[in-house]
Image 1 (cartoon, rainbow, N blue to C red):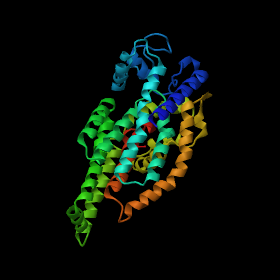
Image 2: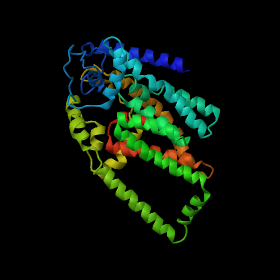
Image 3: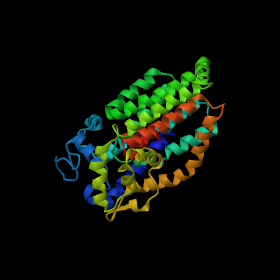
Image 4: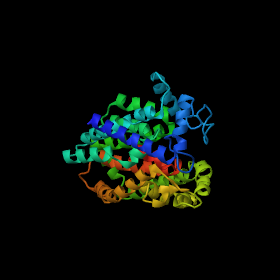
Length: 360
């Protein structure tokens, strides 16, 4: 399965590379400029000191002044190659996490006692997930972050500290904020594991919601939710992404997107609507296939994901309703809460849909 998956992803990466070469020959297989491309050229340049588009060492624009640890990570690989490294070499290296993510997900599901038919289905949908491929077949760090997060999650669920700590450290190196999010969500899952294991804690919590004490308990929970929402929607909101990326994007595409409208709203609108938007994104939107007359290859994967997601919604809703059943495992409830909390946090602190890759 590993070799077959690797061969499949190599084929898909080469196909995307060739399509980009045909559509945007001036970018030599990279995704292109601001408005329809992503950061792959910048990562490549910082890792190698070479800019294939300009055929020299000049830094690509935009983001020429920023530095990323992912570039240092890629540089380690480039130093192992005895010739001047090509983008294809980097792509073949970058798809490695895609191969192992389905296997680790199956291990997590096994630990949670899922039936064999569910395990096969999980492996299949994660192996050909358009969202994962969209952010793994080009040179960006999101699938490496996703792989580290899933390994960390496996360590938490399986109660193996080393399995959790090592990928967490690599994730912190690649994207520190993602590691912080992982720790927060891992803590939620651990709490529900404790609730699963110890009866007396569950009994104590149940007593907190009986008699007059339930009004105090509900009031405390309401205050925490309100305070957390205000902080997340104002202080922790990634406003510079709105002003530096989304606003110029409107000018480039000559139209205001729903994306921009939502995140340009007041916090009490942006928080709930942004959460729902982020949960469902990317959506089916054929107008995103062409930007200023240029066919956007990555958008094909977005449309495919949007179509598949329509079938996923009722499946997820059924799973969410099972949350309230008495026989549902507490760790399963913890995973639900961690997933939804992660979507909510990313919808305000990130605003970039591809950062959701780690949760998919």
